[in-house]
Length: 391
Image (cartoon, rainbow, N blue to C red; front, side, top):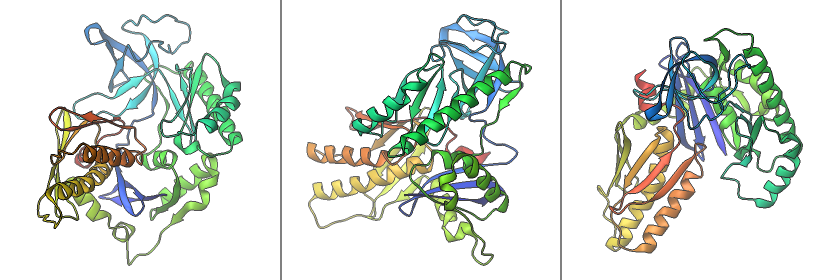
């Protein structure tokens, strides 16, 4: 079960997600520099670069990257123009699908997403899909049958991990509300001028309420955050209202109660010690992130192969936690200590896959390369922790 801690650190909103007593995610956001993720704008096509299959769209001082291949059906702001051939000067309704990371512009899409607690209504993608973490085929068939009434050529539906086991009526009601909201956004856009912000995304702590599966408790010591969260839960997630707690103890601040200063220090460092005495070295680069596993001070009484396996298994669990904690994304390579036994390698990969299942962000274990490196990809959504801290 997951627990959210929402407080302030260095005058910025800090959101921490705990799972089984361990912090597994950190998000930091300034009130004057809130993430643009999820914002919907009317943007103007600035130029089209055919050799990279992209357009660059001006949002009024912010330039965004727009993939032509990923957006085969543009959504024109005035609703009159049709066709897929974009031209400079065209005005589109676009959503920020990925925050700016490092030197890269934010990624824009015309496949507008309207997420709820249990589902996402996706304009431009008409299929009915399910989270890859839901494996109950019988349950999926039952829900799919109930949602057929919403099947159309305007939007599709993704059933989120949070929905598993929820009454189908609640899922249907949410889809209905989200589809109506989508239509109101499109109607509103027709009367707005270019560069208008049509809809703002929520602060990261509100997004975390929506995106965290199996939410057990929400604790904050900031009264204004408590009120915002209370209002959001009343409207969007009434079943979670009783989980909200306003912490008030002047002698022991929430950030110290939860040892968040220690977590922040660990997330900012390149070296992470393991209980066995081994350690990880984590090095993000422009192209990818490399994690190196070292045996360090460990000296067990077992055979060398058993010792290496024990260190690697502990390192696998901690590496998965650190990837989520630091919000690392893109290509990630882990250099475990070499193991000759194939069954040990299989066990290692099995542990990694199980740990990645705990991550709400899509994380894929690709394979072991010929050089013995474990290759992973993780979806890019928000900025990594080391960039959040530097802002």
